[in-house]
Amino acid sequence: MTITRRSILGAGPVLAAGAVLGGATRAVAQGRAAPLRVGVIPILAAAPIYVAEKEGWLKQAGLSLSVTTFESGPNMIQALASGTLDVYVAGVAPLGVARSKGIDVKVVAATAVEENVFVAGPKLARLAEPGVAPAEVFRRYRAANGTPARLATQPLGSVPNTTLQHWLWEVAKADPKDVAIVSMGIDATQQAVLAGAVEGGILREPAVSIVTGRNPAVRLMALGGEMFPNQPGTVVAVTRTLLDKEPEAAQAIVTGIVQAVDLIGREPGRVAPIIEAALGKGLVDTDTIRRALASPATRFAADPRAIVEATAAMQRYQVKIGALEREVPLDGLFEPRLYERAAAGK
Image 1: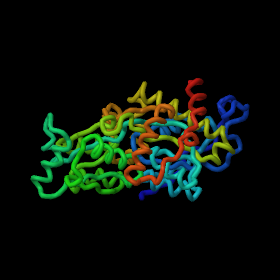
Image 2: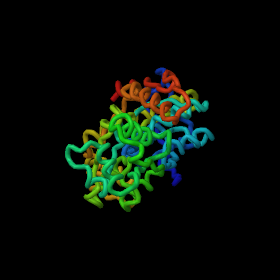
Image 3: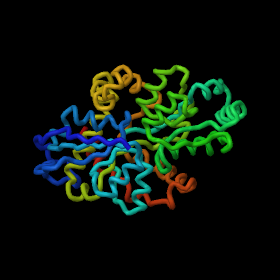
Image 4: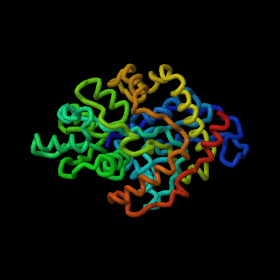
C-alpha cells in the first residue's frame, strides 16, 4: 500500500449559514483546529475533492484536509476501523464489508459511475476481433497458449474485483478454466498490463488513457455499463462521528463535491491542470488528463440516490461470490440530505 500524507489547506472564513445538516444556523467548521483526515484512491473519480480544494470552496468553509492515498478500498477500510480517517473517497462496495464489521459510515455523495472498465493486453486484444464474444476470446487464448488468461484487478471485496467477476461469470459466461484472476493494487495492475505480465485487467481513468497511449496495441474491451449495469463506483463517505458532531463540515465537503462535479462537466479544460497536479505527480501530463476526461470510461455523477439500487445489486453479488458474508441493509448506509441541500443551493 502506497501512503502519502499532506495538509493541503489552511483555515479560512466560514461558509454562509443554512448549508448545515438540519438547517441549523451555525458557522461551518468554525473552531476546527485539526484538518479532516481524508482517504483517497488516486484515480480520476477522486478529482472532485481536489477541484473543490483548488477552487477554494473548502477553504471558504474553514476546512483543511490531510490526504492519504490508498491502493484499494478494502485497504482503506482498515484505516476507518482504526479511527484514523474522517472521510472516505473510494468504491462503495467495501463499505458494505465495513458496516458488517460495525464501522458506522455514511455515503453522502457519489463522484462517478461505471468507471471500472476491462482493458486487454496485446496478446488478448489480437483475439478480440469484431463479433467475437469475450468468452470465446478467453477460450481461444487458452487454446493457443495452454494457460488461462491472467486478469488483474484489486482485492476481493473491491468494486473492481466484483465488477470483473460479474462480467466474467454473469455477462460473458466465461469458462473458469480459461481465466485466472490475479489480485494486485492499482499501480501494479497498470504496470502489469504494460509489461505483459498479465493479459488484461480492470483499470480506471486516467490509467486507461495512460496505458492505451503508451501502447496502442492495448485495447479497451468492455465498458463499465456492460460489465455491471449502472455500476456504482467512487463515493464520498463520512464517519458517523463526523456527521453527528460536525455536520457543518460534512455539508461543506458535499457542497464542494457537487460544485466540482458540475465544473468538471462544464469546463474540463479548466480543471485538467488541477487534476494533473493532484494525480499526475509529474508522471502524467495534462493532455493525458484531458483525454481521460473525454474517455468513454469517465462518467462523473454526484447524486448518491442514483446508485442505491445498483449498490444493493452489487452487494447481493458480493454475497454470491463470498466477498461479503451477508447483505447489509442499505437504509443506514446512504445519507442523501446533504447532497439534496447542496444541489438545491447550486
